[in-house]
Image 1 (cartoon, rainbow, N blue to C red):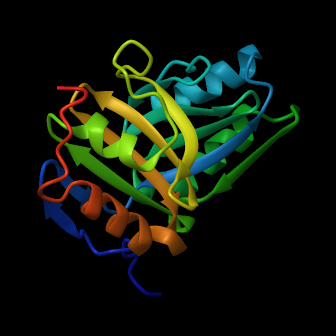
Image 2: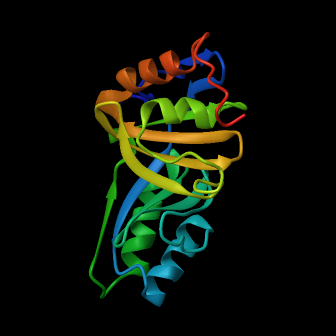
Length: 189
């Protein structure tokens, strides 16, 4: 069996912000009734995080839950823990209607850090990046140039971007270009 590798092998760029591929991340798409107590308990058991509300995230990259739609979460676990987490979900949600799928190797994750993270994302996505509308702990599913992406703000100066693995090089190039020198607008500064 071959060793797992991330889409861009940890590529990084340091410009107006730091952009880096975040590496291997265990990700499980979980669909079902997010309002059920059984689902809430399963999410807590698997990730250690509370159930996120609409357009929210809970926890962190090593154990968290990200709201993706009214009946869908993205569970974040260690890459080496996905198989065990899926087994735990099967047991915890037995008898309920749900879908749990390992999407770890189908996605790429990027981290953007620095004072101008809002500006970099605003250049690429039709999302209101104003601090009154997009705050730490929130997520938006959107388009980044021509591809689907999800962005969530972990901290005021740190954003994660997730996209399809097949688009990783394209998204990295977009982020690199948007974070390049000479592009400072200062709108959110």
